[in-house]
Image (cartoon, rainbow, N blue to C red; front, side, top):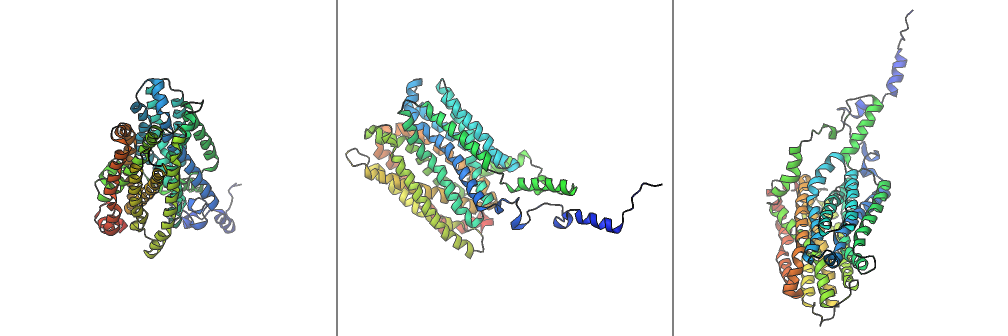
Amino acid sequence: MSDQVTITPEMASDREDQKPATDDQYPDHLVTFDGPDDPYNPMNWPFRKKFITTISYGLTTCWITLASAIFAAAIEPVSAEFNVNTETSAAATSLLVFGFGLGPLVWGPLSELYGRKWLILIPYFIAAVFSFGTATAKDIQTVLITRFFSGLFGSAPVTITGGVMADIWAPHQLGNAIVAYGVTIVGGPTLGPIIGGALCSSRLGWRWTEYLTGIVMMAQLAVDLLVIDESYAPILLSRKAHKLRLQAQDWALHAKHEEWDVSFKELYQKYFIRPFQMMATPICFLMSLYASFVYGILYANLESFSIEYQEVRQWGPVVGTLPFIALLIGILCAAAVNIYNNKYYRRRLTENGYKAVPEARLPPMMLGGIVFTAGQFLFAWTSSPSINYWPSIIGILLTGLGFTTIFQSALGYLIDTFTRYSASAIAANTFMRSMFSGAFPLFIIPMYHKLGVEWGTTVFGCIAAALIPVPYLFFVWGKRIRGRGKWSKDSV
């Protein structure tokens, strides 16, 4: 007697009902997001989860940027302990920031292959370990080497977090999220000298600037592991496709990311060659130059404020760092300006059929250029100890306000202008910015000792004045220039 089971039409129908309808849902076997209810799509995350993710990544970035500046207060004690000049000790700050410049060339490509979360958290852990290495250093060479690698690995969140914001926030919400995140990037370097000054003047000593940095970074890492999920859509779609293959037993199902046969040549072109090619375009070069210059001034202030308030005005090591609070207040005021401009940007976006309007990013920068220049000249010419310190403090506040409006507007303009090539534009901007920021602390001490605070800062004020026309140029002729560009014509 045969053991063969006869499949009746009713049984076949039942089996068809139980089988996932993948052929109808994904006719080309290409897995995509399923609308506004798909839990795999990070754009559909609850607001609370998006907010927590933004804050967590913001703090993660804040602590490594704080690490870049906290060492400024340690220059004198490190010079004394290892018997080197202050220029050599100041190189510890510069080398960390140089690491910031080289890191994006590594972490940017890898994040497109493996996603955001682990390409931020693993290098961040290594950066924290190098902070402990600096804290236990027995010679100046170890200090310099560990600081460089701390910057190289610590640049991962600085490089990738902007992409996370774009992963989870809709275009009309992204502006405010970027403003909030931008405050954490520039907030760290303003708080670092204050905390470092307090530690170096206490019984704990300069090594605790690095111990504290490492401890805070490790604590933040523990929090991140608990609250942060992967947000890169191609990786999430690959995971979704894997799950559907198992459920449906349909091995043809796949995500677009799984079709990508990545080559070193492709990544090399995107992150090594194209950024430098884009530097030859007027928009990328001038915007990056302006943003890099003001960012360099931020790191120059790590030394110039020390010279002005501790050497010239004879303030103590802790009180002498308090002017950085004025810089932070200026940064927060700039955030309010940028948030207000986002209303104008959203209106222009709607009028333009929800296509980006790069020039609508520029009004804060147009204002900021004037304010920044005024702040530099006010600080320069009220720096004499015979003049009350309040005018110079106001100059610092104006510098912070101008710096942040320039920096954030420049980034927004580059992203909107170069659209699908924006990763290369940001890589170019980050590289130039880090080179400026790393170079300024190397020459600022001898420059200010030779020229004085008045003329040293006046030089920077004159350069700032020469750069004021940049946003006005692009506000008027930007669309025409974009239309002629190889990488920017898609934005017209």
